[in-house]
Amino acid sequence: MKKQNNGNNAQDNMNNGSFIPSLLSKLLFDGFQNWIRDYQHNRNIKKHDVVEEKLIVVENLQLKLDKRVKENKYKIDTLRVLLIMSMIMNFVFFAVVLVFLILMF
Image 1: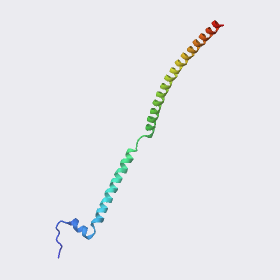
Image 2 (image 1 turned 30 degrees about the horizontal axis):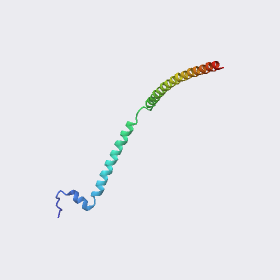
Image 3 (image 1 turned 45 degrees about the horizontal axis):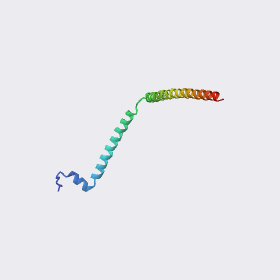
Image 4 (image 1 turned 60 degrees about the vertical axis):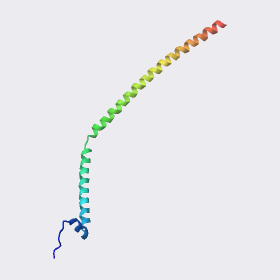
């Protein structure tokens, strides 16, 4: 006597224990396929010119350095003006004190 097939192959497979290994093998195969595809994709992404990347980094560092040099030059010029003004004020104060002392004695 033949068993009637009602279209429940998955149910029959679950009953005789072959459903889990077939599902597991499909999952493993799909996972392995995805891993290979991702690995190849990552290898293609990493195929870039390292020298070009380093040149870009050096150019950015050079721009930052130029900006700092300009800022430092501005600060030095400002300090130079303040120093000259301070020296002039000290000279004027010294002259006033000297004149005051000469006139007092």
